[in-house]
Length: 286
Ligand code: C2E
Ligand code: MG
Ligand code: MG
Ligand code: MG
Image 1 (cartoon, rainbow, N blue to C red):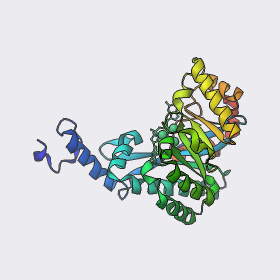
Image 2 (tube, protein in one colour):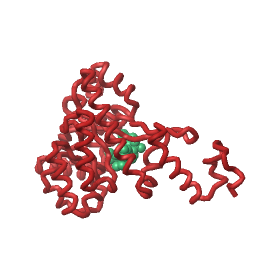
Image 3 (cartoon, rainbow, N blue to C red):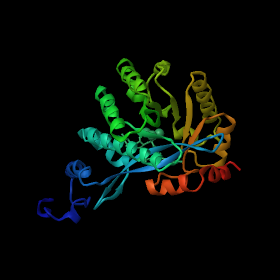
Image 4 (cartoon, rainbow, N blue to C red):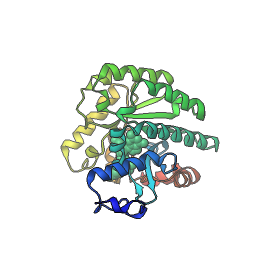
């Protein structure tokens, strides 16, 4: 069907002309070239200290800017990247770029913050430790300013995972559990001293002010985390009412559209470093 179309770039991603498997193959080939073609970029979303309103961190979120497809979000290409193994070079690129950018901000004289990088299960192996070490040396970023976000599903093989976590912990980087509460793993890994932070999944935050069960779950997660000596961050905070709930329940950090959507590095710099951030967020706090 699509044979006669060879060479016509504009038609390449026309959904009508290709079967799903053909589309996948085209997508895979384009993804393989995305790094060398400089098509990957990171967006940044602020993480705020709930009590003080201060900027404490930033999450790096990958985007793929394809000449025909436009700006593609991670939900649309991370699964295929994982399936094909392309996540390994992409993940390495993300780590390096996030560390490089954070170091650059520090060198510009902005107050130092941590950068959070999402890891895929495929990356969560013994080689990761060497890779992280090499990237930290290369970029000059101090390990305490790197936070790795892993998910509960990566903790399914607890013995294996805890060994990697301990090694990363020894390097001095921080570890956060992303989308906390949505996985199927047991809670036993929380006894591992290598975890610094729980990131409450946004599905629990969504109806926090309307749904008593969600409110109780979030309250309980915060209490449990604090008893274990962990920091808690809420994701998907969109309203002042949600923020107020989180303040009164002693959630340590917040992230969400209330403060900002993920933005480019330049926008982030202008919005959160150039104009005094504590001023702009104290407005939100009233
Ligand atoms: P995540 O790590 O849980 O990231 C949060 C996602 O929620 C982001 O979507 C962000 O834009 C969105 N979000 C943030 N605040 C709000 C809010 O207040 N309301 C709503 N409705 N959404 C909000 P994004 O950037 O599309 O990323 C989606 C997922 O893709 C991420 O979920 C993460 O699991 C994955 N991802 C992103 N970057 C990378 C990466 O570099 N490597 C890997 N392996 N996965 C990544
Ligand atoms: Mg994340
Ligand atoms: Mg999340
Ligand atoms: Mg996630």
